[in-house]
Length: 186
Image (cartoon, rainbow, N blue to C red; front, top):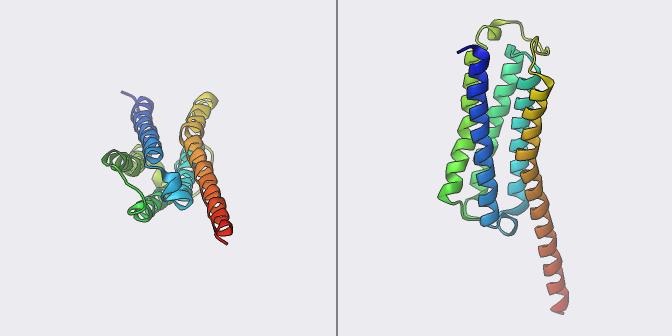
């Protein structure tokens, strides 16, 4: 099996499992009424995690894996892990985190780290090159780039943005109701 096939097989498989875990996580948030419990702060933590992995995916898709690019990707993955920890720390006690959601979190937290390790192994020789930022010499086809980045935005980003909008609206309606309640009390 050649290297490109290996990359597509493992990278595609890890990415697909990560997206599936994200979808499970999204539905768990809906089922546990995130909008009425942990709300907007948790949703913003999800946005931050999405942006960090989006940056890592964009760098890995468009740029040669030089030491600089690898360190930037690794920093994004590490910061994603920090936000994931903060996310669960904030949420615990504010809403129920089911065993299914915990399992989804496990996949969503470890797969970026596994992908980072796979990236290092597959680009070991390039990691000894000068620290630079340059486009890939043999990039993925434009169709593959659009599929990869587009699927991330649609399958990963749309649920996160929908959740942020829903939690923001819920907070506003709760604030309006409590304002009316205060007004009606007098």
